[in-house]
Amino acid sequence: MAVIELKGISKTYKKGNEEVTALIDINFTFDKGKFYAIMGHSGSGKSTLISILGLMNKFDLGEFLLNEKSIKDLNDIEASKIRMKEIGFVFQEFYLDEYMSALDNVILPMLINKEIDKMNREKIAEDLLKKFNLVERKN
Image (cartoon, rainbow, N blue to C red; front, side, top):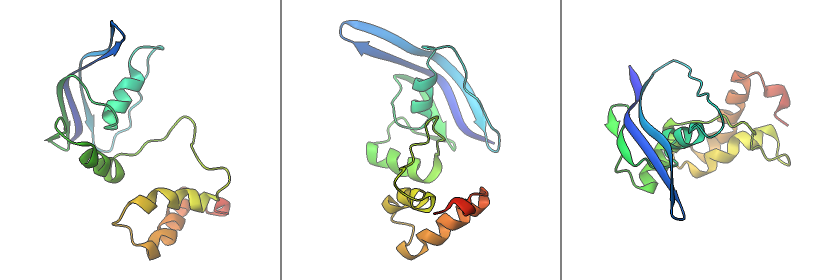
């Protein structure tokens, strides 16, 4: 089953009077349960593609289906809700707060999710740390 389907995705940036084309006619399907690597030389559009896949950047042309629904006309609030619930990133740099415990770093993104009850955050975080064999590092 396709989780993400890209059809003819293109993106051009404007820098002053100059236009820089980052993506041209990208067609790809990401299937549920599979892992993908996006590779290429510097300047090939990897970061642009990932920012579009993560709903952090808009594309100029084409169609982007997420779970068979078009995301083209999402506003920022709708895109943020989808990012919060359905899209995850593992950054090259971990972006952890070095002054917080691992447990608190896991709890932190839950603070903006009104669907996660305040009383359950710590248990959810501990369960996640256990799942990834990091419970011994929670403090």
